[in-house]
Amino acid sequence: MSRDAPDFDALVGHRSGRGLPPSNSPRPYLHPVRSLAGTTLTAAGPEDHPHHAGLSIAFSDVNGTNFWGGSTYTSTHGPAMLSNHGWQEPSGWSRTAGGADGSVTWFSGQGMELATEHRSIRCFRHPAPGTWSLSIRSALLPAGGVAQLEVSSSAVKGRVGAGYGGIFWRFPEDCAGPRVFSASGDGVAAAHGSQSPWLAISTTSGGSPASVVLAQENNRPWFVRTDGYLGAGPAVAWSEKAVVNAANPLVQALHAVIHDGHLSAPSQALELLEQHPDLQTSRPDRTP
Image 1 (cartoon, rainbow, N blue to C red):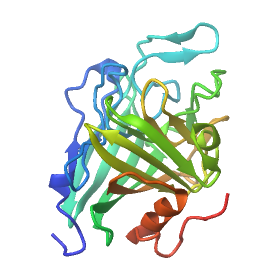
Image 2: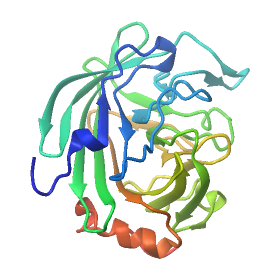
Image 3: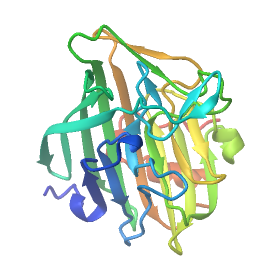
């Protein structure tokens, strides 16, 4: 383990997803993701949405296959349980100092290879007390024989505000009193759908105060929800399909700072975020 990396296994549970029910669209995921004090900040298989899987990469529709799990939104009948669930199979993963990287193959429900992905996960120390940093990077391409991928969402099919899909962070069911900050303003209404370069969620999980500050690189709209459950992530297909081919891979990156304690202002979130090692050369914009 590098002196610049915290204990990956102590902070992150790295799961293959094998053994999950087919209707959950099995996939590799991170759970639990913990703060340094041991507060759990992810949920996997929660009662309200059993197909949510901690911190994972998922889409509700890739070439007609559901990689999100649960129901599929249809323009004619709304949400419906269909037999179109795919799965993601990790392979060739290797451990590095403070992380892991490897390949993920995306299969349709019929077992056809639709996409191949390279994914990396890194943990870093952070100079602030009770704080550490995390980065996830992904590059997705069509599998051999597949001309292109069309990544869609429920919003693209007509469900207003449901543009979710991409790197998604599902928080625990018992999170209380969440506060949301972003460069677009305070609160969910300001952050949801905005292209803020950063997003902060401060909450109480399991009775302990904790905060997660997120930053993205691709200027995508944020999907943020606090009503019913707490979850957030940049949305790849917010209002229109994303087309992926050999010359145009789907690249995603999410950087996180996990902090023991509440955040009281956006300035506090940015101070933590600016010390993330992966963001030292391109700091998130401070302005709305």
